[in-house]
Image (cartoon, rainbow, N blue to C red):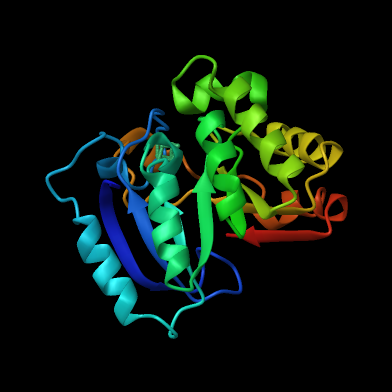
Length: 229
Ligand code: SF4
């Protein structure tokens, strides 16, 4: 039984190259100031969509979608994730996962069920607490990243860039670290104020250098590098 806080019927961006529905899993242990969907952070919500309704919707989309992305919140927070993925796989959909990598045991449980991972890396691992507000989050994210790389599952690492939380020098440091760890596909995406409940972060998002300009320093480190500005 999965607690679902939202459902996007069709997305072309949440799993690049695929037509996918996105299941937004309720609950996240971190408290990123730039979170664009803070309503998904509490473990339960009065706006949850019953899992049976999600499955009924997906049955109507069989043959029309390539896959289903489990996003959040943080999907690996929930004990019911693996069973939910198995049910969706049985309908013939490919499975995508968005994760910050913070629950290693559950990540290990679901990686064999997953066709693609979009893995968030938020900051230099030693400085994670400045973004997530949670001590020890960087260690857990690094372990999660190592699990994803070692699994051989197709993946993209992505970093949301807010200039006040992640200065350009730190962003370049993150990219070099990721390349050194074997990451082949990397995307950087500009902070969006839409949905963000932190007023001061929304007002301090002005960049001095363009993201394209900074990205030029890191593009050659990866087989695929994308800027979502
Ligand atoms: S990890 Fe994602 S869902 Fe959780 S608080 Fe941070 S941005 Fe929001």
